[in-house]
Length: 360
Image 1 (cartoon, one colour):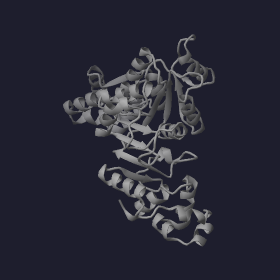
Image 2: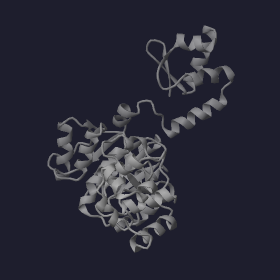
Image 3: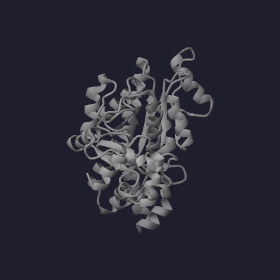
Image 4: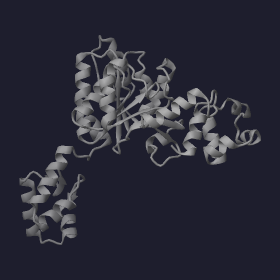
């Protein structure tokens, strides 16, 4: 950890010094080390109560010392809003975390959140796993909250196909909650990421979870809610999704089931209905190929001669007219027609009405 990160940690552990104060201090001083060493008058000029300085933990403070050691020993990183690897989508929300604690490695892929009931039905768990796996096969990172039920099924669905997933906790990053998810926690940590806005040692208090939910939706381009009752905490994630301009999806359920009251209500209010993964992909990632499709394209590309490969590489997942392909390739109409027919027979491209071609 750098001196600035140790300074940030001290400030984050200061009682009553919250997210807003951290933003004000960084804006005024440009660096947390400078903020830590500044005078009371400078703090007041920054718009932060100088009385808070007396609460900053000293180097000898046992809680600060324990957490600082934990960060090093457990390889937990402090990622601040001003770091280059802070997630861009999360940076855009109106109340982004000033910092979060990170174990593992943040995936580079686009993210999609799946949340829902802790008391999920077998059907809900099954469909959640299937959708998470299908999205992960398209290299979309599944974000959820590591809770029992739908959250756990979403993480497991991604892991089942070696896909990326992020768990966002409502407690310290060193706390496994619920304890039954210890193995799932470790499986996620092995290749993916676990993050928390709360310092190590923080218990899973009820008041922490709304804040956790805004991060889940903030990281994601869309949020799917599966099996949520009328008062479910998952609906809070849906509210954050709408506030943050994210796409909101829900799966319809049995009219007589309590677990469907929240999701059915969301659908009545305009949430996107999901019956299969294409409902999500078509709206957010209409042209994103699956892992299997990319492998097939790679294999086909290795089998083509130079002219055919040139044509194949010019075709993407947006349709192109044959005249446009001809102009960019420089091939004669007869040569191009022969290549396009061969690519179609090999299953690499598809011809659409109006002499339009698209890569599969």
